[in-house]
Length: 121
Image 1: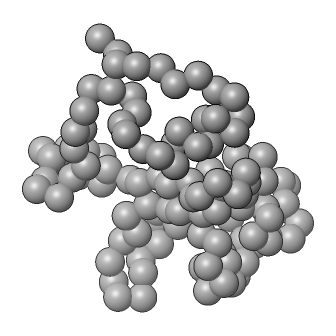
Image 2: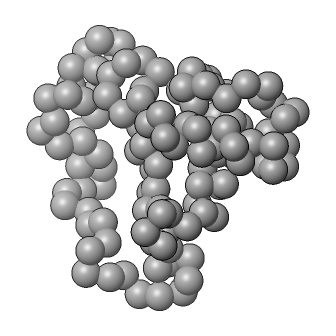
């Protein structure tokens, strides 16, 4: 959502978004990564309803983390929403651990002095 072209398209759509003018006067990259998740959620709902230039639907959203540690990701499970069984390219759980051997995750957890918990049973 933080690409200049996406931001410009959202800015053009903003006047048509119910509730947008009540929560935000100017749409900026800072608005997307700020603490007000109501704005991010509203923008995500609008993006989900749009057709992309190639006629496809967006798979999800991605934007810079407000902590500057990577990106925030969200995806839409459209097959589930449409009552269809999982497809061959759907996300899969690879482990029952709530975190894997991810050095980036460990780095951020250490930065905020957060404990790393083990396997959930």
